[in-house]
Amino acid sequence: MRELRPEGVPFKMAGKDYRLFFTLNVIDDIQTHFDCSIAELPALINGIEKINNAKYILTRLINEGISIKADDTGEKPVYLSEEYVGRHALDHAGYSELIQIILQSFIESTNPKHDEDDDPNAPSE
Image (cartoon, rainbow, N blue to C red; front, side):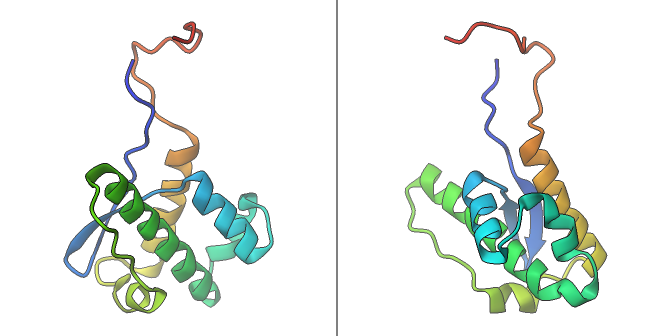
């Protein structure tokens, strides 16, 4: 059985590779920040008038990936600001592609991939 840890969604920005992670920390932060359910995520970011929301969420996703990497390596995390993300997020993708990447990271985190050999009814160890 493989570990169920998500791999994150790759995202390239300002010549660097990042991974976007929708964890419980991110979901809690989004729900608190916007005072709504995470089920409202598509409505929060769809449409160019919601660009500020998308920038906030993208920054949070990138910074969660930075935290996870720091947990794994023991290095001190260096987080990105919303202003930095706002300057560089559209370097390699249009706004609609950016929205799709955010939604993809949510979908992948809530529907983890399983190996074909994984038995969903196997007893826990």
